[in-house]
Amino acid sequence: MGEPKPAFAPNVVEPEAEARRLLDRIARGDRDAFQAFYDRYGARVMAMVRRQVAARPLVEELVQEVFVAAWVGVQGYREDMGDPERWLLGITRHKLQDHWRRVRGLVRAVGAHAEQARLEARMPDADLRLALEEALVGLPAEQRRALDLIYQVGLTFAEAAHVLRLPQGTVKSRVHAALLTLRGAFARSGRP
Image 1 (cartoon, one colour):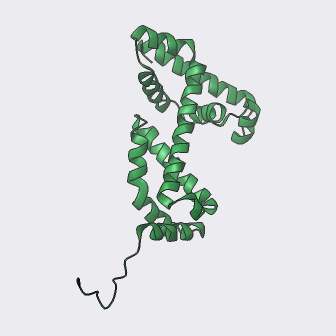
Image 2 (cartoon, rainbow, N blue to C red):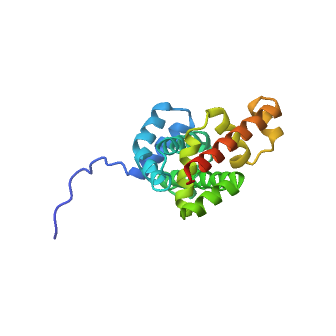
Image 3 (cartoon, rainbow, N blue to C red):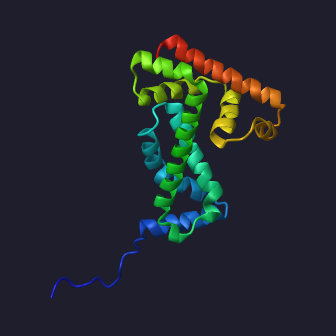
């Protein structure tokens, strides 16, 4: 006949249901729920980003971007999008794709210097991307922000100037200085 069933069932909350409840609370602006959501999924997102990005400061920045996007976009979450973890990992994939799109754009902008260094050192493209990540970390924040708006977001200089509330010439100067720094890093090192 099998084992007798207990007279009462323990109150076990399904992890997915709990995560959905957290998202509902986050949608209402509950910061404690957001912290619990981060505690639950932060390590998973960090591991996923680390597998594709080597520079530690960029890993941390991308993880932060993922969770900011989750906080801002939680209103758009629907159950038919999958469980909350899958939804968050989808955001992570999009942020990683944005990151690599930006890196490819910067490699094109740095252009011949990066390609020449890669060829001279017989480096694979992965090493080129790693070197570019390391060089990006060394840029001043205002130069990185200007590069992001131009090469990642795809804004024009005029649009980026509007977003940054700076004269267009200042934005151009920051981007130009950043590109010179990146080119110099490739030229000095003999490797990208």
